Image 1 (tube, helix red, strand yellow):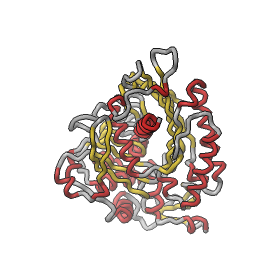
Image 2: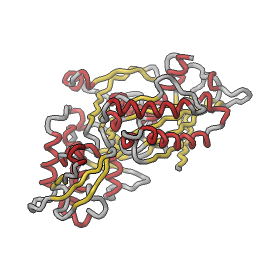
Image 3: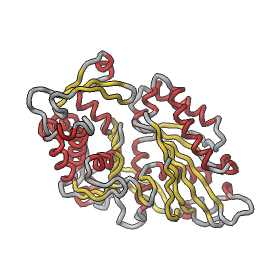
Length: 412
């Protein structure tokens, strides 16, 4: 378990319409009221719990974010598609962490929510709903406050919006024209979100890529889109040309992104895939890039404004940069798009040197390179790679608990 405590970050929920007092959470006899919120991120590769702690100095004053407790388990819920009750047990195990870290006096007023992302979006509806039903049973037996619709699949657009809110709140950029865009690369989907400043972007963008919402007494109109099936792990399946039925028949899927002599097995979302390299002598970056481009062609809408934008990139962007020593795990750092492409070329053209670290490293880095180019970024576009900002995870979950706290105050 990692307990991540930040210096107090002011959360001006008092500026939100209808939020001038949070008396439902007040603790009698205290001058400082502590408020908690619990968010489960049920992703395609794991389930994560975020336990947020806020305090309010006096009724009606702004909330301040003190920090979070974060923990995760693997695999993700989608791996339990045939065993939904077993999947829900992984949620129960993390819920014990919340009970251990939140005083029992606060349990009944601490909102508890779970939002599933691409892993469950990719499942057949009946399997996804069976998993969510079992999680609802776990929640109903918990001592925490379970709001209506507390367990659901998170819309891809909301995932992008919440991540954008989280990063811009933590960096102090929610107001003015200096917000940053966000790039989130999960296992099953990838999101790109930013606040357009150029009229040409708004004029040339399809309506379903634009969304408006109100926050902190301001209206924001964001460019945001979630590409389902283009997360890192789902992209591996696509590059291999694999299918669940063929995998069950023990078919081997080959790629030029692997060394010629390599063969192995890999499990994603409960399905085990056999993979191997080709022996035609074409292994390397160019051959791998050609395979990756094949699954990405025609998938993107790009805008010129991205070229000069300021973006935070996290999740698998961060992980693969750490894996190849482009950044330090604890500190993150800035990388240009070309840093990913140069590292992809190095890894792919010297696979034997890197394959022991991860057989998919060449494919993953090549995919990230093609993805960033597909979005419209230039080779010299600089990205800020961050896992945490002010000791808080760069996740959509903080944005989600903001909305939940607002909703509870409005309803109660």
